[in-house]
Image: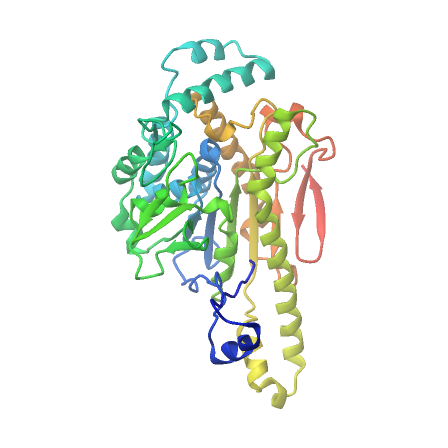
Length: 443
């Protein structure tokens, strides 16, 4: 995260004095409150479920959660951006036994059958990738002109007409989403804080990134916090919260990994990172592929950066802990050593990555292609990827301190619908990474 100081009307010669007095606090330097120990059914003391933004692709996350719930792996902290924020609210805002049903109710609501019947009729004959691609484009076109039930509708009059003005200029009205959230989510349950809940959004006026978190007792989570996290301009208008306006958190960071990792509390932590955009891909050969790849790079990039940064910081912490054990008492008792020791807890981490890999027929409209068939494909892919990952028992076992954080990815091979377009270099390999080694295993 870039740290910026702002000193209005202050010349360079006065900056040092201002810093000495404590003025000019760095903007954006906000960390999550330390996580609390919560009941957990694994050997870990905390389980975080992180859900990335990606619009219609979000059904993949619902499939992942369904399989985790079947395995008895329940998150103690759920954090999301954009569509991940909506899925997070559906999980944290319902009883465990109702969550999958509420997720399915939402996803079936927003993925209706084709009102004209044309796309659904021809879909049964779409046996090639090209044919499936055309059908998907038909459905995406319907969304552009008609909106999505229970989610958003075109603004009338359209915002692009000359002279059209609004407090929330945008192509679509998300009032239907508010009604959907208030019907499917128990916000009192979220604010009880039994499962920690965090969603990220961007302040339109300042450009600052902000997380709304149930550990902040001044913040009462409401439908608008979830809507703000998914207010991607210019499609959706900014959402007002306590006098400020917010846009989609994905404009700054599309993964809540940084936020969760900043809330250090010395707890052994299992992180399930469910991403909807793959950082790995191929060099585009046409303009349509360029549009797809651009979105993948734009919305997936910070995931890898956050993981790499955390791996480096854990290596430094491990090195200091080794030195601390060898320090003479007079050095170990200095204020400097105590400060470093406080920041160098010996908690261990597993980061389990599940990444959706698009089949070749999914175009740049894949994040707003809400057809029922595609939604079911996404859900099934998430379920199967979670099942594959859970078949490796090591993901549920805390790593040795020397191997923390252990980073697991068993989804690097694309799901069956995409085998034809998978990169030949993966060749069936699954990747398991620690802070010092990268090993490849094959099923």
